[in-house]
Length: 157
Image (cartoon, rainbow, N blue to C red; front, side):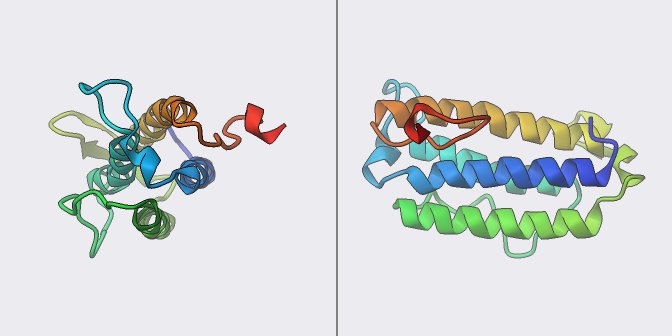
């Protein structure tokens, strides 16, 4: 659980930038990469991560004017990256304006599960990290560069 605004913002910036770095490496062709026909594609996972910035932001009671999870998945990598950058930057600005050390203890609703805002924001970070791990596996399968995440990847050597 986050107990300090600056701790959360530092982590949010770092994790968001890392996710954007992954999306920058995608290609239009790689968006359809999947483990199997039963699983999400790389593009669908990336879009889910981007859309979750809105979902978690809404649950943290941010004012996210103009952002909607109803928007369909972009068809190209360039459109996906553009949307991801827009959503990341807007949510970051709202978190900077909204979060305080004190309100990290406020109880928020996460789909009928009440929790402190700081716990919700920690859950968001781990959610993004989990799905970015899935993305990195599919990026390898699609034979595209995996950027440095928590240290160098073999592509940075």
